[in-house]
Image 1 (cartoon, one colour):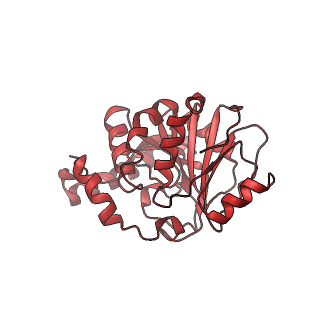
Image 2: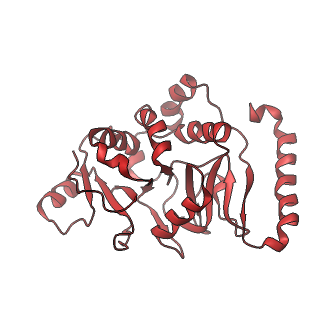
Length: 268
């Protein structure tokens, strides 16, 4: 269970920390930090050495069958004070900000005005979904997909999706929340001006050992009748306003051609 302090900031960064985790520097009281430790050695160090972690909230989870999102659900349901945060970023431990701070990411997410977002992936990142790669034409983009690697949610969005967090180890969650936000709230945000670099190969971390994406996600996909779909850029805030008309034509022309190739079933 977590060791908690009273929330100080309006935003919360949650990091699931394993071997080789990247250290994220604190930025004063700009945001609060929760660290989740699941390795036995790290749990013992955190318990015996107060300097081991600078987090405001520390969570110990020795049950290796529990994954990041299931732990987050348990913590937020266990202590209602966590629902005081206006925005929560759930960060994998192999991501590092590039040319920005965590506070910058939260600020741009707030400016985008959507319920769910994520920092774009900087050049040199390991990646799975092209839509989240940094596009320097935008400060932020409205899209129809945000992945599980580093989602940022408003308090309202987190409360909506929290009941799903322990139904899968993570596979399929991004399809569910992205599709729902696209249909009911206009989309989700990819934050291009505040990118992060993903430093490890996809599914290369210890948290994925013994987990099959196909097997893990099959029941979740079947239960909610999910399937993959074409990822689209739906607009956003441009960094070069004078070139907006040209850029809009290029972005949407590519999407239309993609839809023709894949068929309209991609949107069903």
